[in-house]
Length: 361
Image (cartoon, rainbow, N blue to C red; front, side, top):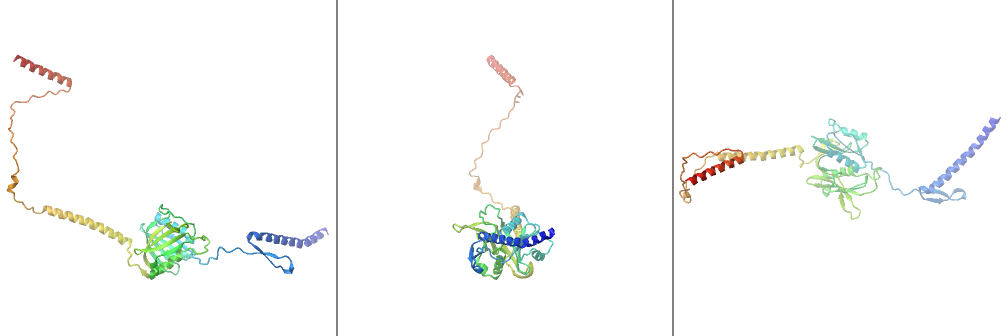
């Protein structure tokens, strides 16, 4: 009977405890309201005291709608400068992703599958050939288009000439040369550059500041990439880096292949350039050899004898003839004495003999 009474008491006390817990939760929520943001009072049902409710703070970050993700990686065989350039682009582009190096034997179409696995819709792929030539692929995967460039004159962020600095993850301004709006192939490349190098707004890893500029300038049929810091005081520009030059080769309709939309007529492959340099050096050497052969032939040729000039001997004076002296007496041999003191003694003896003979005479 005692056990039944205790169970009944517990059942009766349970709803009261639940009401107490709810009341405590309500008071804690009311106390927490001023910490999260401002409160406003509103009418309450039943004519009681006004009910307080929270007003959310102003929205500082919107929804990330433009979900552009860029995969930046390379093939095997790149040098240290290319590796540093790739790392610099990753640090400047917060919407980029990395992947391991791709084997040379694999076809380029495999990159579309890699981008799909990494959930990326843009790709920057560095392809190294002969351990000295660097090519860059910019592609919109998997539909296309894609462009292939030869990368020249690479300078990285670590060089001392680049004195600028910017906030990590800040969104850049993109500045383009006016020629990008005139030519159709440059207009296509401009849209590709905007989608790849432009950091999407409200990206989780980006910062809501604009303090540097990416410039794309066309000079000498090449695209020059520069990165500058915007100084707030006087709005001047200081170069940050990296810097490189893109020499356009082809634009393809698909991603890493497909029909060719544009081919650069001014492009000269590195192999052809090296071949022309070798031919020019060989031509200079060949020209020197020909000059030497011509000089040898001139030396071996018949010499024209010039007639003697009779007036040439007018100003020549004959040399005086000296009489020939014949020595009949054999010269005295000089004694070889190593000791100087002995030599002096011998000379004194000879002098004494000469004096004696002269005195007797």
